[in-house]
Length: 162
Image (tube, rainbow, N blue to C red; front, top):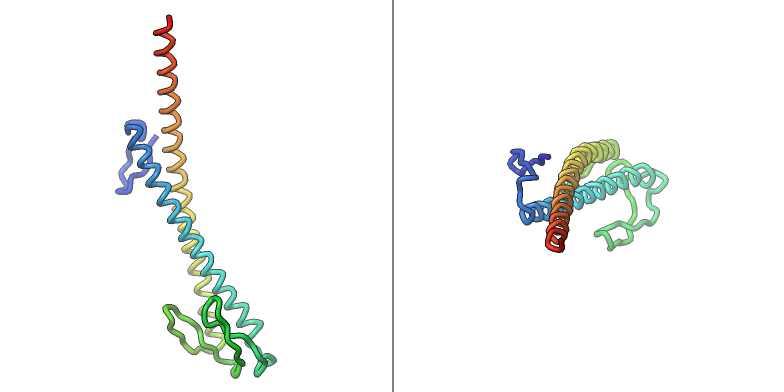
């Protein structure tokens, strides 16, 4: 059995001592947790961009001009406002910077973001699956080692008793 080391070299897991295997499993578990958290963050960002697309499609219309609405300042703070222009909007391009775009360009921007994130999510999913496979391999080698050590312990006891 072989697993990829961080340098890309292959190592034979069966040659590693048990403490080193356990350290490797702990490291792989941490990496897997970090990658999974990153995956969830990307999914959340993609969902927010989809929400922006929905808002542009349903909320920014000539019919909604001058109607009262709530404007989000943060994820939990909204202030009352009114839509004054159904053709141009301010979009958040990151780190607190906003750019004025017409609604068509704003939709294009958010659609590109959703598509880019989908590509990143697919790539990250492959990495996560590979890392999870490595964790399973290490767990299997540890399990075999522990079982064989227990078996050897039982054999030793049987010989002493006889």
